[in-house]
Length: 182
Image 1 (cartoon, one colour):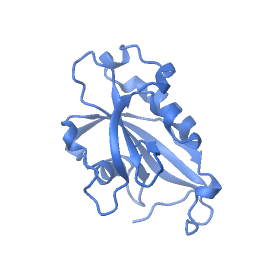
Image 2: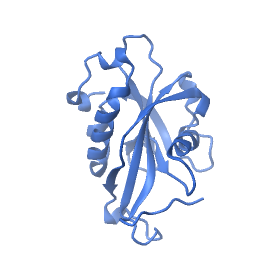
Image 3: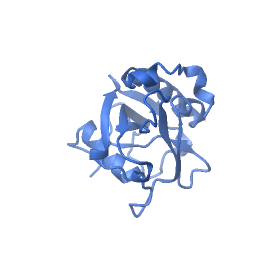
């Protein structure tokens, strides 16, 4: 099933920020950070298109399972961004066979809490995996590490979603200034 392109050239998409099951109630939040296959050490959050007739929440659960093998009953959605966040894909990165008029993604971002052990994350469940490695990193670390054209969307998503972190994690003294530390 395909996703649609809006009149401005953006494909509806979901972004997934998955929180590690905290080892202690006062531990700082860590998020899943995954390396794209063939991406020359390109790391990102799981994300994917919303199919025609599919809700954003349904797309989250589908993409979560397709990309990292985590089942819907192993997570809880804690919150989502209030609006679409957009980024333009650089022209040299657009596929030649891409839908005419496609310029980038518009994304709803979701913060999820994992309620399963780390081995619930499986990158090898599909014939064409998206990722070949993953790790837990500090909450704001991805902002400074993701490819440049996605950095502003990541910053906006994480800053908005921080309000949904469990109280102990929010009070652990995290800040955007920690974006470049793992």
